[in-house]
Image (tube, rainbow, N blue to C red; front, side, top):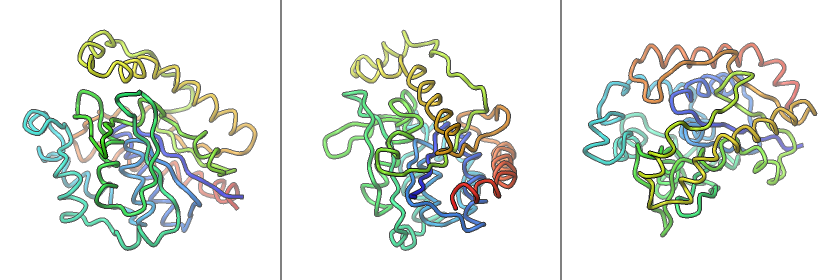
Amino acid sequence: MSTGIVMEGGAMRGMFTSGVLDVMMENGIRFDGAVGVSAGAIFGCNLKSRQPGRAIRYNKRFAKDWRYCSLASLILTGDMFGAEFCYEKIPFHYDPFDLETYRQNPMPLYAVMTDVDTGKAVYKELKEGSGIDMLYFKASASMPLAARPVEILGHKYLDGGIADSIPLRFMQKKGYEKNVVVLTQPPGFVKEPAGNMRIIGALLHKYPALAKAMAKRHIMYNKELDHVKKCASEGSVFIIQPAYPLHINHTEHDPEELQRVYDIGRRTMEEELESLKAFIS
């Protein structure tokens, strides 16, 4: 049976996912396919390049660098997370992405993004890890109002979590019969409606379908979460999630906070390691 891994987003809650993935890699756990949404794609790509420790390392190193994430970057470049710095300088100069290993790894990696004109999810397999793939990574993690839509081949995209936050059904349709789902919210979490949709709708008046998708995101998310739990009860899904809320800012600048959430991910995975091995065997 083929086994996939599904990695939801959550901005800097993704440090939890990074800790989980690093323990997996250190223990030789591999998957037949993977899909990541937003931070799940940005940090999850290290699973394909087999670089444990890379995500926490560069996030701590550049946490206070305005070029990485800041209001100044938003004002000067139009993106809270600086596009050139995050998707060119870091992966190809400061903390190099292992492109050779990434390309040789047979595990398909998909990233999810939202088409701003349709409000629908788009899934792309990213085989090269550079060039246009970096644009898709960026699009998957570009939060509305904190980033400009990313234009690729005539289409504009933003954060994949708007349209498909937990793409388990996508992996099941691809034929992955067993799936590990890494969530960044604790058991019992229920997503509430966004409280500022009137303002968001006004700011996104050029993209009514996107605004509509954002207004209904809590409905979509909670239905997907119910599907994950149902599949887990049936034995086809293994859930990894924090036991309690992580309480970390979306744009966290404190390296110690990043380390704290990363360590929670590591401890959680270490506790679940033997159960996970039994599930994927």
